[in-house]
Length: 186
Image: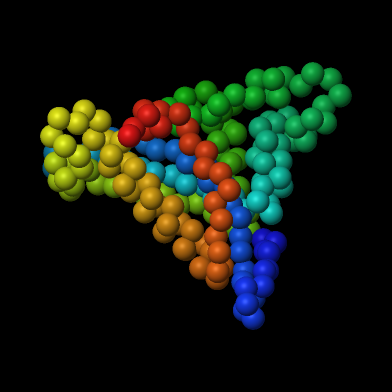
């Protein structure tokens, strides 16, 4: 990570500027042995320092090419079937397609093994253990969004403090979130 050092009085300050890419899984049912079930929701945050964003984006896009040997995304001289077929959203619910599964597998392998470029945080919330009545007025229809928003702030703070504890200033440049019903929540 390239860091920016600024002077503040006589003290040198280290700062990092990041963008956040976020998504959630709502109310996932976890079936436990002996008939017990729990409902969980998950918040995922990918933290990308601006200093590596171009490199990371290039790596992830190039992994969409499933040609052998793999090629850079824009390097095909002829129209490559992989590039036209693989330029699509990849969502965990639609992973039954073998092409999407291969791309997702390459991404997961990259995330697990390339620690210098990947900063992510996943927060699981056991909804079964929460008192839902504590999250908004009784007549509120969308309590999931209230719960999500409350824990979303916690996930961001925890992730940034975990990865960038050595920095004096952490600046969030942008937050990108997959569309859902949360963006319209008051």
